[in-house]
Length: 127
Image 1 (cartoon, rainbow, N blue to C red):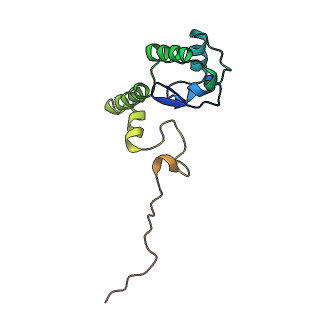
Image 2 (cartoon, helix red, strand yellow; image 1 turned 90 degrees about the horizontal axis):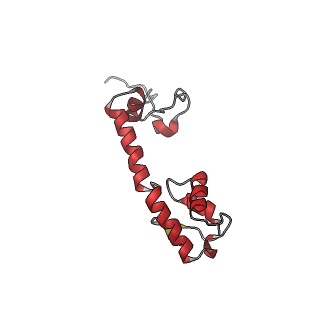
């Protein structure tokens, strides 16, 4: 497996698809990278020369934010929303869906496991 920007990319897939395993690089970005470094997108990773891998690595390092940089940027954007106490920031803080989804019946992914409200159905008798 080739290692680019600290991520092992699969050998058996075309380089265009393999680059998408790096956080922050999608399909269109990988096409732009390969066009900039003059590499055929259909070439399998195992068939690339060390020179081609090195060119791809250097281009990504210089021009494209990846992995930690992207995660940090997203975290800072969410933190900014929380700090200014906008509607979306409050929803993030409360762990509720942010983009207008229904919460009455669904939203278990964001809200977590359901909590019973009624309690036990056993009657308590006085002594």
